[in-house]
Length: 238
Ligand SMILES: N[C@@H](CCC(=O)N[C@@H](CS)C(=O)NCC(=O)O)C(=O)O
Image (cartoon, rainbow, N blue to C red; front, side):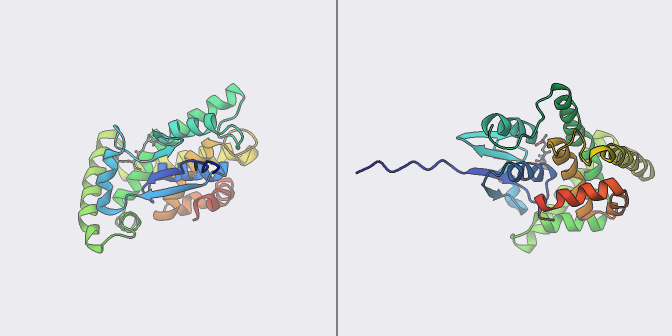
């Protein structure tokens, strides 16, 4: 009897539906055309996500028998292990450096603005909690909202944005939007002539603002950003 072929283990994305970092990874996998399965940690099941890695954050990707945590490490892993697929990072060293800077800026700076607008706007927070509790018993919404509001406010205060006046936070955010719009004017993408992980990282944060916050109007009234968001939306199913 011929040996039964061993099926390669599927790629599994451990995620929260409303996490911009998880959506960034989902975007990368779609861009590369890699099929994957999703494990959701909605509602109070989120506590189990803490055990998936030493860091305790999502996204976590199980791929080729390895577990990789952090969206940026996942991006590098995917380019290294799937060389025949569209690249997330350009080959040219200077362009790659610029992509990595944009990516890091999105993950480490822009994320806090997205979190600030989500935590401090009651409607945005309710929308976010509804997304985070999809498929879970309704009673989980109240404790999760309390938990995320308290923990979110504390970390945004510790980071600094939470101690600025709302007017100043908004003004700084609008300056960032202008910079992005100016950069996009040249090719429609942040670095070079094609989409890179820079667009996926910045786009995932912006799409979360578009999805839950009234500040979406500020994003969509900037012409280059509006076109860019329209191009990124299908990858996010939004
Ligand atoms: N640098 C990480 C950030 C991931 C991250 O902050 N994920 C959030 C969800 S949006 C999280 O897991 N927060 C839970 C926690 O901080 O305990 C990445 O790029 O993956």
